[in-house]
Length: 300
Ligand code: CP
Ligand code: NVA
Image (cartoon, rainbow, N blue to C red; front, top):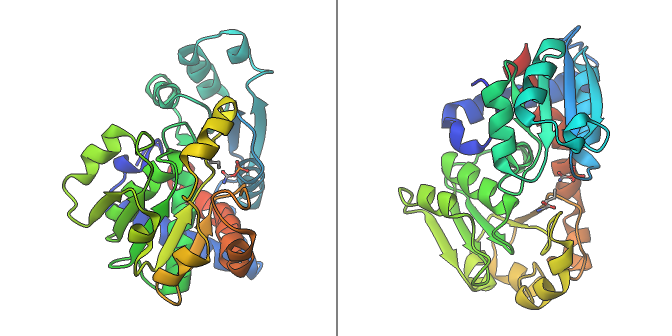
């Protein structure tokens, strides 16, 4: 594994290795056991979109690993003035040891990896959010002690989160059912990927997807960059919500997960959100541990 660009690139074994290392690093951090695997190393973090969790967890994680992180807002880099990503990749490769990038086009991340000579980590694109889903799988495994054979349900937009959850869930042996309204389905490349998995279903009805689920996921109806479509999307996604009715058909001990930020009373009711706040904020915490594992795998 040279980069983390999208989960399709990882084998099941590589995902499991990351989750195991993440558990170990979490234990070490909680018990004050030093784990300076990246002493003297620098991570550059390029952000073309807003972030709370990704920024703070990568920056803190790098510090805990003995290295340091540079916050590079694209609006302050020459990239924001049109310097090609191909050149940025070659320049940054001369200074630093890895790049985490959050941007719009997946191609930009792939190009950084093609032209740079250092590991590239995808911190969210319009296409996928692999770091989030590694933390999500880590969290589900903590609560359920396994992943294989669990039933995952995703309700909402076929966006970056849906794309990564489908690929990650199927790779670790989960049954994955996704409920999206017509016109908002996951990416075609992801739907192609699912063709070899009979344990994948795409449906339109949220309750059909939630039936007997062990873990339910949702995400915002309008992602970053889609603010202008927010009103239109509120109509398209009406009913694509995790609420009491949906929870009633899931397993009684079903988990609810949300990558955050959450829009209460849109994709999830405030009531269900608060009833499942423990796992949702464990999920947010696990971004730190899962990403530390990714950085150690790629940069140590
Ligand atoms: N879930 C997530 O990626 O959060 P941020 O946008 O705050 O980084
Ligand atoms: N789908 C959301 C995820 C935010 C972490 C977005 O792209 O804005």
